[in-house]
Structure formats: C-alpha cells, structure tokens
Image (cartoon, rainbow, N blue to C red; front, top):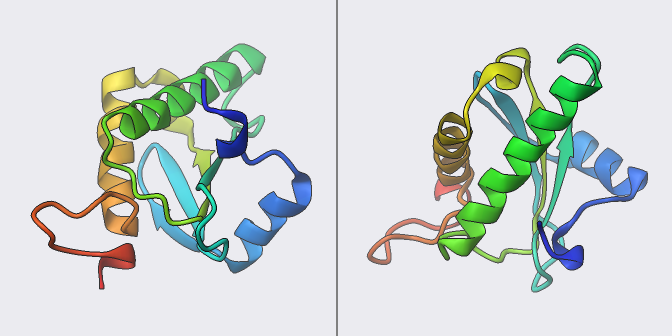
Length: 127
C-alpha cells in the first residue's frame, strides 16, 4: 500500500490534475501529470469509471495500478518531483496481468520523466 503522503485523495486535487496536467496515453491507462508541488513527495491517484465494468473489475484495476506504482517506488526508480499523478483506467486494463500493467507503467513513467535518469541521462519530461 502507498504511504498516506503519497496518495492523492481530495476531489479538488484530482480536478487540478485533470485541468492543468499533461496526458500520456497508453492502451491500458491514461497517465495525467501535474508538477507544481516542488520538494514535496509525489502523490498518486487512481481512477476507474463504470465503463471498466462492475465494482469487482474496477477494484481489481485499481489494485493493479496501485501495486505497479508501489513496485516502481520500491525499485527506487521513481523521481520525487512533487508531482500529482493520476492513472485513469481504460477498458483493456480489467483483463491485464500485473506484469503487463507494471511494464506499461514503467514505460509511461519514463515518457513523463518520472523515472530517475540512468547514468545521468534525461530529466523531468524528457528535456
């Protein structure tokens, strides 16, 4: 489970990410990112709509996303940039395995510049 300071919970914070964030689209999810919090720890939120399915499928998708982010953080590869990150589930996510979600999350985090650079190459947002 993610630590309390790493969770995005308030509706107004989600709205700020939706309105002012950058989007990175993948087949399994949409990654929305807003980086305005400076030195504070990054926070993560997970959204699944009723289009995904009934409660069981939605909860499973949320659990997969949370676990993928938790594993990325444990690997030590996620940069603490003070970003608010929202992962919005898409329909194929309900049938995916943890390995597929983890691979996709790593790929999208790399595109968004949320992963620490390897050998000093790269920075936030790939610039």
